Amino acid sequence: MKVAENLIHIKQQIISACHKVNRTPDEVKLIAVTKYVSIDRANEALEAGIINLGENRDEGLLKKWEVLGDKPIWHFIGTLQTRKVKNIIDKVEYIHSLDRISLAEEINKRAVKKVKCLVQVNVSQEDSKHGLASQDVLNFIKDLRAYENISIEGLMTMAPLTDDEEQLRTCFRKLKELRDQIKNCNFDYAPCTELSMGMSNDFEIAIEEGATMIRIGTALVGVAGEEE
Image (cartoon, rainbow, N blue to C red; front, side, top):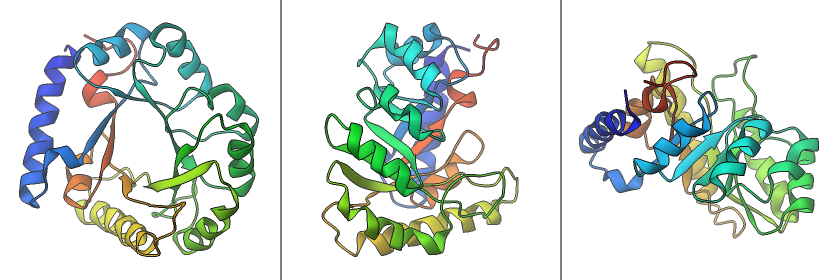
């Protein structure tokens, strides 16, 4: 299906999820995850009116940047190797995967402007997932005060791949509670208003639990070879 057709359905789901919990759809930023699709498909998303695109590897982002440039707002959503910061730092608006001081140091050193970062949290404590343990997040963010080129916009997590709705809700609620704790500290360098959580299989639940950014790939743009 065309991206525009998928977008109509997803917008309806966003509206429905927001309505259930007395939120407005304007509170939710839709990020089209284009990591598995062609440049043409990413451009189709832009033409459909989606302005936020997410990539998880520097190679993929750079290839799309060569064609699309700064027309989208670029989000780097994957694990970022320290040595690759220099490749993407001047091209992305948001980095969703800050999870260690060495990465913060490199971002701060390479920044061409203040970089909007989200701290990645492994709420589900799965070995296969990256991110900080929940109990380590507050002290980590306190340590980030030293890096003047980084603004901590919020937190990000990846929920378990499961159909267990209560398990998903628990994960998202824990992230929101942690976000609220940090937000209430009123750190000037860490407004921490954003919650990046929810993907194709669970974004409605994430919205109901407070997500402000949802990262949708398969349900929106599809995967390579299945774009029509």
